[in-house]
Length: 459
Image (cartoon, rainbow, N blue to C red; front, top):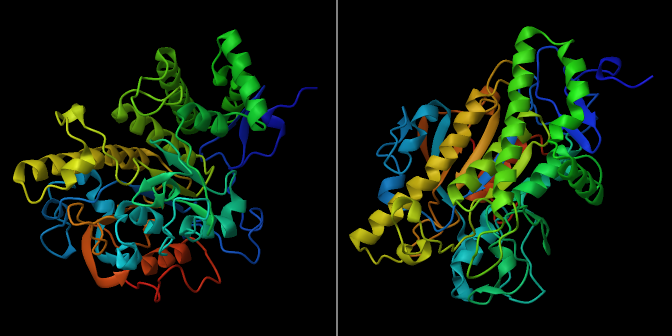
């Protein structure tokens, strides 16, 4: 007798399964919540909210700093007044806090001279002064996301996920004698081992929704293509079985979720149909949309589904590498981003950088609005039960400063965070803030990170 989802225990870890497919399900009222013991958390920290819903943490990185007078709100305190750059976030203002006074002094030149872009991203989640080398002897520090993943990654399908909309480079000289590894990786598993992010939407999709090891997922993809079938076709029978067990509201939620998965799959297929766009510097992997706007939206949408299905609770997303010099023809800017940041106070160049800053924020805002529209297992939104940090390791791109970094946090942390406000910490190591986020994620036994001097108390 064939196995059916109706004959298996049904909870938040349930999957729709078929040949080469294992699609995690979103939280639904029909599901039985898992207890702490069921998640194997005895004696260890666990990222949940007061209601028992998952607590998620993500770090989203934008390159080259920001035009300061368009980033910072005019006054501190509650009732956040969004400046020009942050104005696209108006719909989720009640979930935001802009955080000033966070510094990464280990990214400043010191005795190492030039190389601020490599230091900016290499320090962002580690807090350490990265070793100036373009050789194999790279050295940074374990990043906060990996500290957390090491302790509580066992409760999800993936301990952490790392994304990028840029190429991945692990070696070579990218910035004044600094290895490319520092600019193209946010996550570090150890002092000498970065965790390469996934830049290819197809490979990320197959990792999320395909079953088995990488070679097995690839074989399943080839079979689906040969049969001209979607990944959902392989779980169709189980989804029909599941629908018979669900409430009307859960049926609507499941159908909407499966439609989202299929929409993403179609967008990847569309990109693959046209192949890799030509690039004078490199060959882009097949499956990457030619438009950066579409590319970012696609990766953000998959990250949203990852959080909705509790496939991981820790993620990093490098939107573009620190020092990126891509132009923005989408908004009529033909000069490179990095070039424009060295504006020497020329107003026309500063105006263009401010437009680029706002362009990135607009894409981030779409992601937050999607999370706000997703209902979590406790009836709140997924954004309510998240902590999404958006920031850069450069402050003023013209002067390459690394103090008072442009950082904001979206999400209410399950109701535990103060939101709709602008708070300034003074001159405080950002590492202190990162440790505080780790504590909220259930991290235990970690006294220091990089140049930390303690924790921050007002979050």
